[in-house]
Every structure is written in structure tokens, then in C-alpha cells.
Length: 257
Length: 257
DNA sequence: CCAAAAGTGTTAACCATACACCCATGA
DNA sequence: TCATGGGTGTATGGTTAACACTTTTGG
Image (cartoon, rainbow over all chains, first blue to last red; front, side):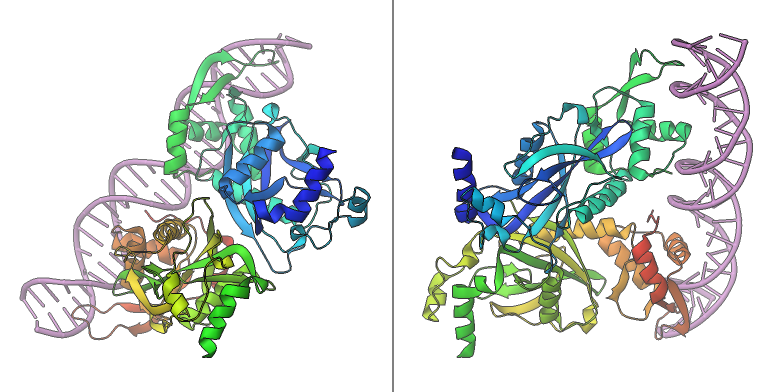
């Protein structure tokens, strides 16, 4: 079986292809049913859920590595992704794998470079929930979305990474436009507001939010309105990508209440 | 000579003590003569100036490693230090050392782990210029301060790291109190303002600055005034460290013009 | 007493907040 | 026609930016 061979090789000689002692982990945020979600993997040879992560190829940039991980898990093309922090305390827990289980597959895992100490670079990504096709990796048996506020038991310090990414995201909200990639192309103002409220964890005033967000000048209102609602139908909006990009680079002295 | 022995051992077996492929680099900012300075090392076995940096011990946290580097170069105790970004493009230039020169010292450097590809974690530190005792490391022949805006030829991508740290520092200025550690214990309002202006690279209004900075409530005015000035003498101030610390943790919705 | 630089105060413009009002729609 | 939720407008209070005036000191 080629698969088994591949894993055995990774344990034994992966360090020839990848950098040692460094990894990347991605916190992939999505927005669905008015809730902020993260994409997690259910480990096969260990307990608990884990963040999608990987190693950095010797000829590969570290951003590229993160993009690769992200694409393999989501099958997305265009992605908003950013490094936000490094985690590397000396007591940082290492991956606790079930060596017995691996042994039954004929894989010798003890003493592998993969159980050396790792410093991991945390990346956070914002993706369109509906476009994602969650795909487990070779060490996982499942790949699923979880509500950020209702996480399952996590491996190692991954719960900390998520908490940190979330607080970073909250911070970003105050001086970067956020929404493109997290929302479908067309969205209504209440949907955008709900996104902000979910990330911030508190209610915002409908009317002030609209004024402020429109003031940034990155939204285009469409003629079309959302159909099938039992009240006044809201307009659809889309991001003016040119201006959105500009605002991303320049930042915006922008404060949400 | 014990020194030579030490270096030879580092090249040959350093990877047994340190993590591979990861390093830390410190951008150490100081403030002197109304100018923002960085502390740099003149490489001995290579061309150009370099940031103080080092490796992460296998039993050492990465923050600890940065603190160690910083203390060895400055001999300072209490330090404000923060990780700000990781650098790890695949084409990241590696240290170009003069292997010939090393060979005359009986040190075989070719093929060493030290010339493998490195991902480096950038730390920036704010220190009191007057308290620093610049000290070269084993690979350097000098350790000096340079004006941030007038850098000498730099090794590898270190000029980029500095530029990045500076823009990060500017950003920090907007939502963190900065000044403690960068200034002497007692300082005048114009001195503090000059610090802000230097970091931001533009003039600020004297009166508005004073009002705003006092509004944060982290300063204590002393009775004493600066002596020997040919005009109205400014008061001395010092930071209220308890409140300063609080503001550091909480952040402050604070915007300089 | 003059120049220089510090301390203190004032005003107008701007922005955030809170809230009122009207409009559209399905039930 | 009513309940629900969206679109638009406005009054208020606080904050920021710009600027005037006074005070202190050495030369």
C-alpha cells in the first residue's frame, strides 16, 4: 500500500524534505448560520482534535507551506491568510501519538524527528464557508467545522492557538476591512453586521454600523434585493475589490463602537 | 584557546544543543540625541552589520532565547521585548561567512548546520540608551548604535527586519503606552514628545500631545524642573509604573492625531 | 526687555451614540 | 392591517485639531 509507505518514509526521512523543529498551523475561520467556525481535524493516531498543520519544505517559503496546508484541507484557491504569532515555549507539549497503533501498520514512530520539539507559526485564514470542501489529511479520520465557542477536546495547545487567533481577529477588525472571503460574494448588510457581532461577541447598533461601514467606501450596493423575506427586503452588497485591497494595505482609522 | 574550541564545537555539534532551522533576531531600539537608534553588530567572519541574534536552546523557550541574546549584548536586566513577526521566505539569504578566514583558525565551517536554511523570529526591544553597555558576541568585532534612518550595509535581509520592526513600533504607538524603558526614569514632556515624533517621523502639536498623553493617566509630574535651560524650565515626569502596566495589558483606545 | 520655549485655555469641526420615523413585505 | 425588520435622518455629547495667550528664564 503506497499510503503506508509514504507515512513510514515521513517518520523516517521526512527531515530530509522538511525543515526541522518548525511547523505551521492554520486557524481557518468560516462563517455559517450566524456563527463563527473553525475547521478542525480528528486525529487518527492520537486523541482529540487538531488544527490543520504541516511542515515547511526545504525549498518552500513558510507562507507557501501554510497556503499548501490550507488548500489541501479546503480545496480553495484565493485565500486570505496571515501569520499572527509564533508559539514556542520550551515546555510546549509535543504530539502524543499512539505508537502501538502505528506499529500495527508496520510504522516505526519512536524517536522520529516528528516528536522532536516544535516551534509552530500560527496562521489565520478567513474563508467562504460554502466554498470549502473539508478534507482530512493522512493522519486524520475527519475534517469538520466547529463553532469557535464550542470546541471539542483539542490536542496539545491548539485550543490556545485558537483563542489567540480569535483575539487577533478581533483586533484586526478595528483597522482592517474584513468580510471578503468570509462572506459569499453577494451579502446583505444584516449579514455583514452579524459577522462583526459574532467576531466581537456583542451586539452593534444596526444604523450606526451601516453608516460607518459604508463610510469606508469599500462596498457597492446592488440593485438586487434578498428575496423571500417576510418583511422589507434588504439590498445585496458586494465588496469593491479594488478599494478593498487599498484599504487592506493602507489600513483605516476605523473603530467599531 | 578555549574560545576557538568553543566556536569549533558550535559549528560541529551546536545542533545537539540548539533547535535546527530556527533562530531569533532582536531589533533593539534606543533613543538618544533626539534620534531613534538600533543596536548592531559588525560581523567578524562576514561582510556588513548584523542584528544581534542567536539560537534557541533545546530546553529553552523562544522568548527566553531572545532575552538571553538581548542581555548578553546590552547587560540590561529589566527589558521590554516582544515578538513581532517571523521571517521565512524560501529564498531567504543565509549567512555568508568567510570560510577561508575561519579555516585559518582551524575551524571547519563548510556543511555546518549553521548554514542550513533558517527561519528567524523577529523580536523588538525598547531599552534605555544610557544604561546599555554594548558588547559584541563571538562572531563580531564591534557593537554599536546606529540611527534607524541611516543604516550601514546590512547582512542578509536584516535591513528588512528593521524596517518591519519600525513599522510595527509605529503601529504599537497607537494603542500601547511606550516610553518606559526607552527614556530615562525622569524625563520632560518635550523629550517624550520628541520620542513619539521620532518614531512616527512627523511633528505633533505640543499642546494637544500633552493633553492626550496626560489623559491616559500613566504619568506623574514631579516638583523638580529641568535646570540650566535658557527659557521656562519644563517639569520632569516619570511613569506611574502600576498604571503603566495596567495600560500595557488593557491597551488603550488612544490615537495620536 | 527680548527671544525662546513651556504651561494653560478656547473654539470650531468632527464623529460616535442613541434614538425616531417611515417603508416594504408576508402572514 | 399588523408584526417584523430594513432604509434614512437627526439631536446630542464627547473628542480632536487648530490656534491664542500667558509665564518663565538666560542673555
